[in-house]
Image 1 (spheres, rainbow, N blue to C red):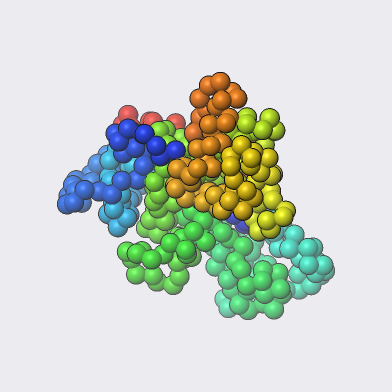
Image 2: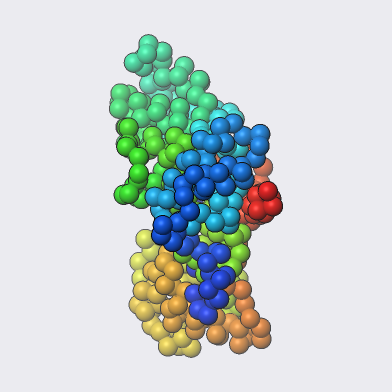
Length: 367
């Protein structure tokens, strides 16, 4: 359940049995693989019967698997279907409750931060759009993130205040059937198998684009996980967040300090002499680890890659922590993150999201 209008937040590949790794990692499909129609039929069979255009959804999912060379096994199929069902209920561009109010609150928040008077904001929204309606009237009529994204694009282009409020950046940062991050899609557009009609942003709001980039975000990286629930947590919190939260837990055990298990090992943009909480705690273990501050920083900079699991820092921290704890420690922990979005009306967490999707995943496997 990524954030609108701002993005939410924002894995020991050791002696894992190859059969477990194949079930929990994204594995390239063996050539030539099952025929496309066989894969589509299998996907369609697992989509809930009440879903409109099951064949169309199955075709788009099969195309995403083929383009990304993802094995179309039951585990991967059901993982994608579980996220789609959780995030949109099989709607390519789902409606968002109270979206006009959410959007206006975001505009007012930005205006307040920039000390722009409310009267000036009201005047800007009274400007006529290309269809003759005021931007305020158009804002009141938006129902989906695609509607709002397109309106923001027009406001940024045509209303002088729009550039000031949004700094040329569209506030809608997630969208589509799998609520994938638009910046993620833009950064991974190479190899997109469809003609781009307008922009990658617009493609995310289409069924084919939302499925393609959502599948990549969910399955487009290898992990050391033995349970899909940790991949679902990563979908919400970021690649390798579950692996990194487990590392934070090991650091906490080794140092005796309480740490936020959020999966963020480095504070964004922190200089070497002003490290974040986790990095400071790791530095306290420097002598025992045989690593100086720069070596620790270089290792932590790999936290968004699978190779971090094999790094000396990762292995030595776990050795220290397990020696202190007197027992093995988990290599994957669901991050403790509270979901912060104006679309959410009750207190939810990454753990809630991951378990909800995991439940849908298990139901799909039984279909």
